[in-house]
Image (tube, rainbow, N blue to C red; front, side):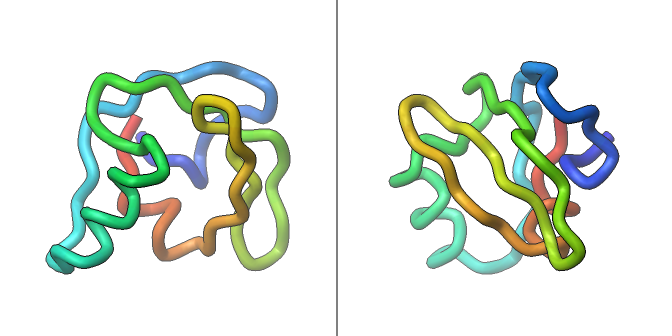
Amino acid sequence: MNLKEAVEGQEYIIKSIETDDEELDSFLFSLGCYSGETITVVSHLKGGCIVSIKDGRYNIDNQLAEAILI
């Protein structure tokens, strides 16, 4: 299951991130988005979703939401 399919307000644990871009992987890691970390979808938007990771909220697009498996 990926973040696009997640229920708003429910906390999930990230299982893996499937991207071929190392820069994107390191960027997500700097946000605290990596395997084993908890993530919550705050709301779904037309072009993506707002997620809460650690103490921050981030707007991510649909393509990235599909790459984050929970």
